[in-house]
Amino acid sequence: MNARTFTPWNRLLAMAGRETRFRFSNWNWLFWDLFYPTLYLLALGTGLSDLLVREVAGGSYAAFLLPGILAMAGQTLAVNSSYALFVDRDNGIFFEHLTYPVKRADFLGGRLLFNLGLGALQLLILIVSASLLLGIPLSLSRAVGLFAAALLAVPLWFFAMFAAAIRIRRVDAYATFLNVVYFGALFASPLFYPLEEMPGWFQALSAANPLTWSVDLLRALAFGDPRTTRLLLEGAAYLLGTGVAFAGALKSLRTALR
Amino acid sequence: MTDAAAILVRDLVKTFRGKSGESQRGTLRSPKPADSERGTWRSPRPLVRAVDGLSFEVASGSIFGLLGPNGAGKTTTLKILTTLLSPTSGFVRVAGHDPVREGFAVRRAIAVVLQENASEQFLSVRDNFLCYARLHGQERRETERRLGEIAERFGLKEILSEKAADLSIGTRRRVQVAKVFLVDAPILFLDEATTGMDPFVKRIVLDSIRGVARQGRTVVLTTQNLDEAERLCDEVVIVSHGKSVARGGIAAVTRLHAPTVEVRVSFEEDPAGLDEFLVPFQPAAKNFAEGILTVRLAGSRRDAALFLAALAGKFRLADFEVASASLEDAFLEVVRKDREPS
Image (cartoon, rainbow over all chains, first blue to last red; front, side):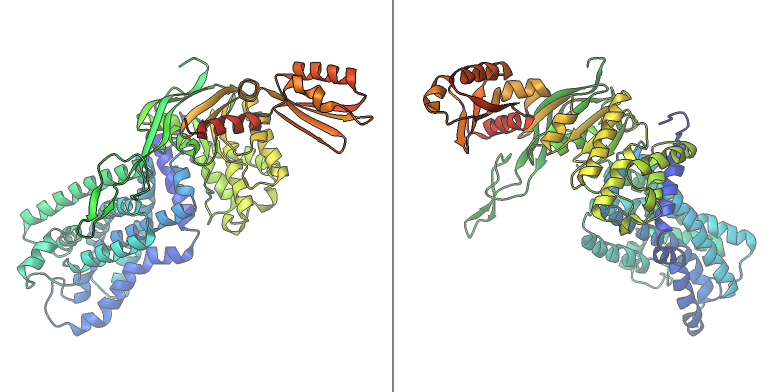
């Protein structure tokens, strides 16, 4: 091995390259990676949008929904990535990877890099579909802002679900866990509906949900939001949450067999 | 650690929590009641010592065999050396680095074939090689240069574009093993690498291992095939119940633990009085069937020569054959002794 040329950046690229080959080997996976959130937006943002008469931020339900679906995109990618770990484990390659000359952080970072690339593609499809198919008005600067902010939401879910998939070793147990976490996070957040008229306990529960933080921030970027303090706190919580999830993922990787 | 040591292991211990159950040994805590009203008890999860004070040293550039029966602790030891597991206690150095604190530095010095079958099933054989080499920091051009030779050597040239998932288990294992010869890691770990391979491929793997050692690289292997270990290894450690029960060069281990020699003799005529003749030699085992005498004597080939000389003085011999004890004989002897209740 050439230690001089196998720099940290090359290690990240090597890991991301492997992940790319692996995930692009199956078009079925790729379809769900790229189009799942867009399908949500199209399904809910067309018929349902016409049915709803209540006034929501953005002027239409489809426009209201878009920031939420953008926030959800990172979560969807993380789910697929974490399932890929079970495939790697079944193929025996997961533990072989852990003997390769890459740091555990590179292992995570490379996979995250791939997810960010795929996330960028997914968000692009989502934003273009929202604009062209649903006619949601988006200026270029707003579209770029939403794109960048949604991309920043990818790491937290990626790290958190990676850690969970390593710790929960059985795929059936993980599927149950995911159903609770994924749908729990979706519905206990302002993604599909405004929370103002929800019961107090539900709002408190939602306030502790990372998806709420990113939906609030993305919606504030899209339509503006006067709750500056709350948004700042949510932004800080998101950053902190990402750090904690990274530490958790790293620890789970270091103790994968112990 | 001596300068020439690629690997140093001292008093290595690895304990696991076993499954709870009344029949398990070595519990740490007192049992807790599972259902005190019904008077049944469930023992706590016992502590299992998979590796129990193991020590050995692997010389740089040598082929070293980590041998032992199933469940002896070989794979656990290998996983510790390859940074997959943390030891409970002990001193370990691989290429001068601590696998726990300097895992990355250790991984930079090693290439590993795990006991479990491992392949990128959804990738082609070629992509399996390319991914492996890239993740070992090897330049693409260098990988392309070596790939043809490795694929040719391991009989994989015709299937480079096939998906690993479409191959037989044996062929996937061949790909897995061939990968480690694609990169230049100074230390190779091979855990039961030849299991399930046909004799042709096995020979290719063994020749490749010898070739690697000739380059001054170190090979650590575990195998259940003691004949293979005997032909290949410079030194071995035999592990039983997580402990070293014999270690050293093949000849030394064999001499020390199975100091016997087997003599087979055929006669030109019926050897009348053979039983009386054998009494002073006190053979460990003897058998006379279809005109052939087989005896196992304590001692070396020199003792066998003296025995044959005496035999030739008394009887008319047609042919003879002398075989020293094998590594397998030594292995069976030391493991049997270790299993005997003290």
